[in-house]
Amino acid sequence: MRIEKLVIPTPFPVGPINIYLIVNDPLTLVDTGPKTEAAMAAFSAQIKQLGFRVEDIKRIILTHTHEDHCGLANWLQQASGARVYVHEWELQNLKERDKTRVDRQLLLRTGVAQEEAEHIAGHYAAVRKFADAVEDIVAYRDEHEFEFETGAWRAVHTPGHTPGSSCLWRAATRTLLAGDTILKNITPNPVLNPNPKKHSLRFAALKNYLASLEKIQALSPTLIHTAHGDVVTDFEEYVARLRRHTYERQNNVVSLVPTDGINAFALSNLLFPKVKDMTRFLAISEAIAHLDLAVAEEKLRMENRDGVDMFFRKR
Image (cartoon, rainbow, N blue to C red; front, side):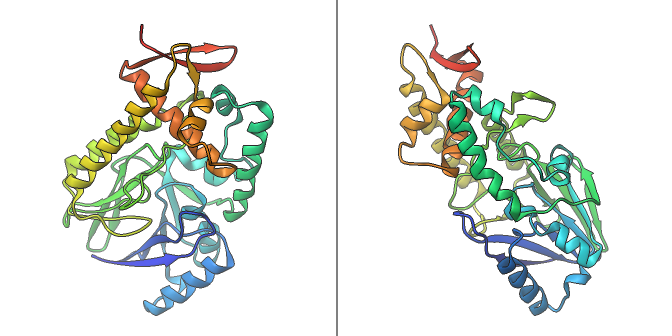
């Protein structure tokens, strides 16, 4: 089954995004790029070079709902009539574009002051303009089969980067379309999100991500197409390096916890003292993800004090 990569510019620090056209019936696009004039122009030009028109797209599958992955979904649907598919845990993210990605209550629980929380949320509110709401959406679940004329791709729910992050798996060729779950030269950030099953709780991003790596490892993929950068062909080596990096950072996080405790915001400032604005939210996300994992693995304990989660070394 033929796969074509389109490289679409983004206005984000991560750089361009790789999206994929599955050339089979129905003609299917995996991810879209952000809603910018440059992205629209690049998409239109590249699909024309492949011998297709925007109007030929019949199906759009989203790996998750960050703006660089879903931004052009509405534009493409309006132009082609294509159905848009997204994991059920991120359906509302695509239907409702009036909310910032930052959950203020979860952010306050990390120890961020109210004014700083509003500042961070304000920066992310500006990101909303890079995607429009989509009305005609189909929610998929883990193991959903996307049928084609000559085979199928299966949805593999791989939560971690976001709760609904998913990959597409082609068993016949042991090929994975990984979105942001696997990236060649970047460690996917475990972004701070509410738990889809109970929004007042944090989603255990890093714990789920490590479980997702095991899930992918069980598939034994030989070729992984990523959303940013090069393909991954040596997954066993890749995942070993990633696990080693994860636990090296976690050991560092645990070592930074003082005897009188620390919150995630303060720890993020120790880990990443120079970051600011939008990057500060990612730093906080990284810190809380590692702290939550350390609690889950009984290396630390957590207490909520006056609405802020504090982390302590085990007695």
